[in-house]
Image 1 (cartoon, rainbow, N blue to C red):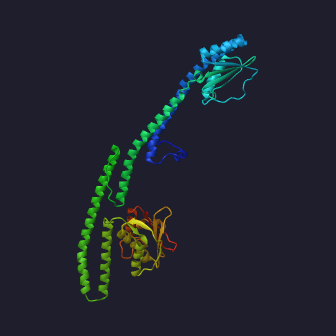
Image 2 (image 1 turned 90 degrees about the vertical axis):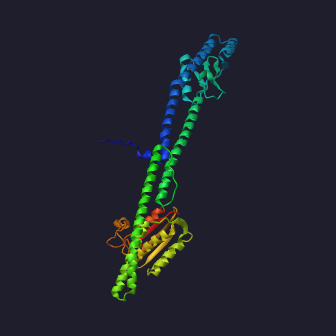
Length: 447
């Protein structure tokens, strides 16, 4: 038995994680690199840099302790001058006695707290007198130390590099530059891999909408395998569609020949009630053959065109009115969509005829969606369909008990053909309860 494990991630964290493959791949690569860089930087400061700073601070504190002890041995002005001159020549320290002064009470912290810690610790170990220091770089790359003595304050300036390792920021800079460089390289490589998947998705979407989209497998080996599998599947589907269309066309042709002979015989026969009934049966049979063939043919390779919708819909509604339907139209002008005109008219006619067959009044509305695209709404005042059977109405050749998914002489393909047409354009067809009391069919088309 195979055990499946899942990494538990709190829901609050999931909200902040990227949802795209590009973002997640980048996170997988960049996050470990960033964590490693932070760990290395932390280790550098904690184990190496602070140790070096401690050694330097201890050396400076020893020199300051020597200066204080020398002053206390002989606090005369001449001795102080000699000590200051010797400290400047041999230890690069600037020493001055500020008579009658007190230690400052305020202190500015250094950029890194570890600098203050190492300096404080070193001076506390070497000096018994009160002291004060400023390592904040306020004094032009110098550290100021003041020690309380009997006559006042002994002020000492020391170069910063005598107290601390001043090249730590270069290490940080190199780490930041390395991280940015690695991130840039990762973005380039990941983007190339994701682009191959995006092109495969575009090709699949175009094929689903019946478009001829040239596509060549490229990218990583797994992506190429998926693309080749898609192309093989596409070829099998196209071959199956061609075979089915050829079969239905052949059957339709074979059926039309005797159907035409029967219609000719009925035209030559003596008029009567029985002849009229046979003519109605023949008309219904011809309509059924047309629907079968339309369903098998699908959109028949018709090219996409940008079409003004209002005139096209008005023409379909006018044809329905000529057939005896009562149709109201509310058409917003200047709305266009990319579609196949013949397939669209056939689908809309199915919806209008279906509504007219089960209601007295049909209303067709064309409106723009706020999110983009258009809605074509067909309402009727008929009995409607239970909500739990909406999806069942779209099944091909399915006839509901209420007989609401096709017109009276149909075979249950009207809604199926209309939804296939809408989805082939990247839209959809859904059913709702109509404000008129019957059924509402909403065809959503992209702009």
